Image (cartoon, rainbow, N blue to C red):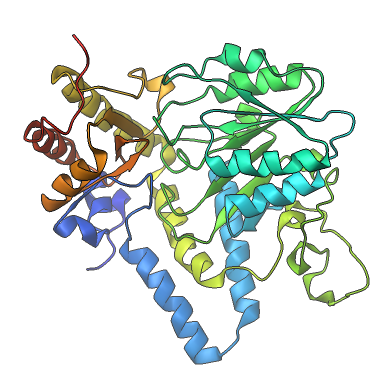
Length: 392
């Protein structure tokens, strides 16, 4: 099937985009919160890597050039400079490098939240042996109020590290308000945008974010094994990671075992040899998203989420995700009496979703349609014993 750029389809850009994902030929895919669907351009990127390996053996110059192209593409997507972006293997890898560079003496407190992905809490808790004081902004039910952060961000706080969209319920934090709070109290703000990046604009300059991490495998529609960390330029040289490696050096190919000379850019947060196959897979995915435009994707996803939420509310389903668009991302969650059985029953009908905390996760992207939303609602109508309902 040839690639059809969404921008050239006179009828429906989203439909043209969808045609590039073969899974929709026989399934309804609503699990981008776990893994983006595989597109033909991404498959071609993987095949291009394999062919380069076959043909040239070890074309490392070309492979490193491809990683630099990926760095540039991601920087453009978030309105950053390429030198402010580190390309890493995972968000865990990026955060560990950053955490190893923090000094926990004068300002020991790191604030995270109940809604963050476990790896975030694990990494900061591991820094307690180095003097970090880890404090959690506490959620109430399925909401995380700004007052929860106001209660724990103080003059001893070095970093507020929290999620943009919660993987457990789809709740979205107010990034601008968090930045204002953190900076007012002398702290820096780190946002984990894994559950939102690729479905809405993310301008790190306009939002006044200091550090942002995200990965390629979900809504960026790329491969596992690639993640990104943006660090505001004026902060970069303050950090000297002890979790380091040869790709973090000023001259990667100096092969100087006796000296540690950090790169002056965000590349100082990288470690070992780059994940080349995953780079080849991810670059075409980011270009697909950039071609459509994050504003266009956001509008499409919001409309689908509105439709699904309205349909779920009409049926009396237990909604765990906020209904207000400003308070939610591309993920909508429903209560379930038996999430595993519900997933299996939907899969038998060709509808692929996911689950967390015993709830059903329905995640939406530009390749999804109103027909997908209606199909999953109709399927849920036939599974009343497996879906939780709002109490009367």
